Length: 279
Image: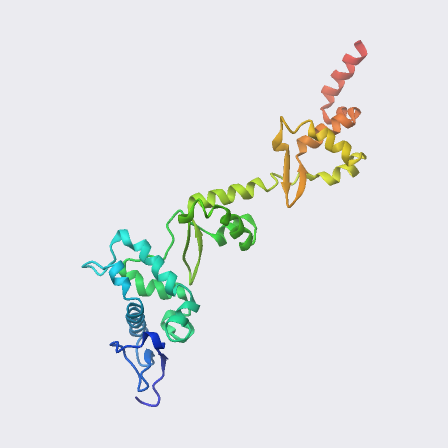
């Protein structure tokens, strides 16, 4: 090997060592990158190496997911094949652990990305790492709802037991991230909506004593009279009770009847005054 040749080597761990037909240096290490190769040639070298090492490490894959004449896994087996692959080498840490302790950053053809690694290596076998069209990423829901990812994960996990097939990791750019089925996403959005205020006009109950110059117990008593017929006028958000604008208006009317004239139009106020004078 010439002294100016640069290469990236990956040594098989003890459990995986066997005489595989792979390019190696004089120390027996697998060669993953050659400076004189084209980009395409180095990609093909990396893909071939990874497939060979993977099948050597997990020979049951070919038995569980045999490939047809077109070298693609049978369509009805592809989803399970994807799960098998991701379960064994679906993160950069697993890749490093399974294939000799060298990180993806040392294999330039894979662009430091586990998502790109899996797609380039296994998609020719018909195994798709992109999400189905109606699936939504945890990141997309978090951005849409202005929540952090962990909040969304906590809410989603409430539905995992009943909808276990609605949780999968798929490729998003260079990464593999959590995606949810349309059904799981619906329930997540519904739960978030149930715990959000419909508008900024809703007010915390604790503000009303100051606004109305009445004690809290009185306000709670009056509000309770509307709860049966108008449960949608009450919300609990972040452990605080909020009242709708409609409920605040009704409380004002009951506590300060004289203010009611200020809540109606001038014509209605004149008509009410006329009827009072006629009595």
